[in-house]
Image (cartoon, rainbow, N blue to C red; front, top):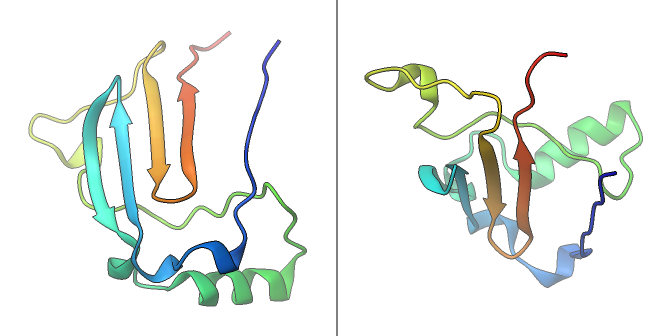
Length: 103
């Protein structure tokens, strides 16, 4: 059985224009950037997406990635079953997932 816990963060509680965003694999920092470097800013993304569909609390918007992706590393790095992946956004929290193998 899997459990999910989260805390709600309101728009008034933080400034999305300059938040740290990071990813780790098995505790090793792989990406480290800030929202100020995003091509499309958070308010625009929410506006454009919500014009076409209803966004609900807990929805995740996937936007792309900062430099440091595995296939572009030398040598390339790929996720394997059992790897623990963490994605963190300053002021919001950390999303943790474990890579599963094929069944």
